[in-house]
Image (cartoon, rainbow, N blue to C red; front, side, top):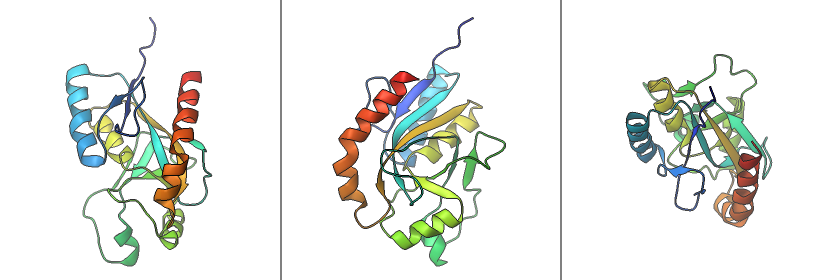
Length: 179
């Protein structure tokens, strides 16, 4: 029996692919829309594709595969917030060699905060990935993300994202098509 292809999803809007279903930008829309897909289509696996910002260890146009994410807000590092929830999720049992992705509704533009993320073994950020993994885990569905770095998390984050986005989308599409 042939293995089914994964349900491939992406954020949408400026990050759409012909081979992926858009599920929304940010964690809330992703949680709602991916839950609907899981209930109606019952996928055997989920693959999220998109872009990411690097806290410094990954370079522009690096392609990263991950199955681990956290939801840490920048205010955590300035001791201005805490969270009573378990804010990490992994599909893997051993994350020691895993690239951990942070998801937040905000893009980090303060380079000093990037160093804080790195000190917690978090290397890149993507607004949706944490929600993808939380939904997949709730439905006991294997999932992973393939993300391409478009920018560093610094004061030029948005400008660099815009400048690198088109090439990044092309490189990511090529990478996915060869898999």
